Length: 198
Image (cartoon, rainbow, N blue to C red; front, side, top):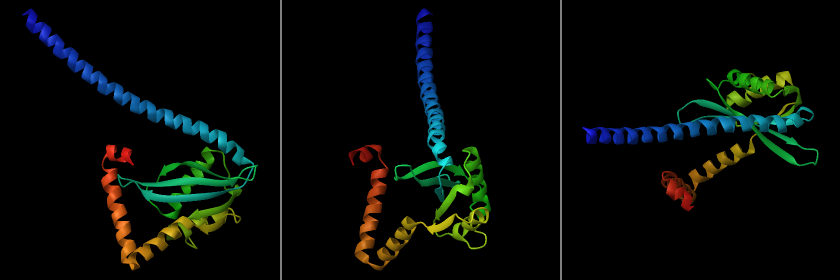
C-alpha cells in the first residue's frame, strides 16, 4: 500500500512538473508579447514627440498575413534637425478590408493615438493598387482632400519589384535563377537549424 502511494505521488509530481513547465513557457510568451507592446509604446512616445513640430511623409502598405487577415503597415519618413533622413515604423494595424475608406480610418485612429496631425504630412508613398492611388476614391485622394500638401509618390521599391518580374519572365536564365533562390529559401526557411547555418 505504501509503495503504491509513493508511486502515485511520484507520478503526480512528474505530471505536475510537466504541467508547470508548460505554464511557465506560456507565461513567458505572454510576458514577452506584453513587454514588446509596452516598449513599442514608450519608444513611439519618445520619437513621435519630436515629429509634432516637423513635417513628415507617410508610407503605407497592406497585405494579408499567414492566417489570411488583412493588415496595414504604417511608416513615417522625416528629416531630423541634423539634416538626416529618418524612417520610423509606427505599427501594423488589422483592417477588415482593403478599400480606401477602410484604410484611411485606421490611419486617422493611429494619428490620433500618437497625437499627430494629417496637416503635417507632406508626402505619401504607396504601391500602385487602385485603392491606394486612385484619382477619385483612392487613399491618396482621401488624404489630399484633407491636406493638399500631401503629395503622392509611387513607391519606388514596388516599381523595382515590378520591373524585376517583367525581366525575369522574359529571360530564361534570370527566371531560373530566381526560381532556384525561391526554392532555396523555402528549403532553408523550413528548418530552424538550417536558418542558423546561413
